[in-house]
Image 1: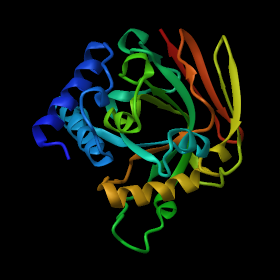
Image 2: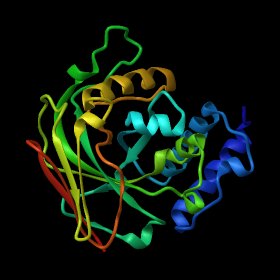
Image 3: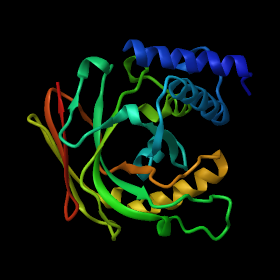
Image 4: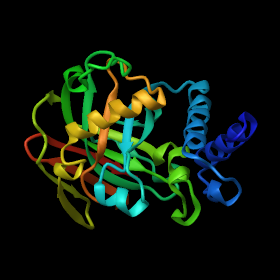
Length: 254
């Protein structure tokens, strides 16, 4: 287990990489991290951001694809945090100069209508959700040459860099909806079933992680359930995510 000084040092390295838009070596090159260490670094990293005035706006899930879990040799999702500094308006601009090597993923977003008590054994998180929407997540690993371990990803706040949400709709079944992610250069299609066999399953997995990792889940929080397709490079121009029956959301990279 890393000591508090080392945890803060590693968080500082990742924070400096993000703010200076300069990549850094894998933490595993210099330290042996457990998954508990990785979440401790993530928490210290978020402490730095909130100390600068950022506000936590929700959570994001990673490794919600069973194929990705198998590729990384893991059996559980990972959780990162969203802040208001990451939020991009639907149709808004993303400054590529502020990112190292960004990619974008199509997602389904949920909105919590009330606080969730993960400790309560009978909590049904789906009853705490009042709305669902199409979303785009911008990811930007701070590690050089995309060389990182599972623990590195967690420590780096699961590569969270930005997110945009389309129009909210009342919660309904979104278990198998067609998803299309496109820009001027390419298009990929998939289905929400790729998100743990349905995004509601991702919500339930989040509840378990919130219990074990002491993640607060507050009214008004956004939950990004995970990617419905492989990530695509974020390039100049308009990127669109369209989820059948839910609508679309766009960002413009400049």
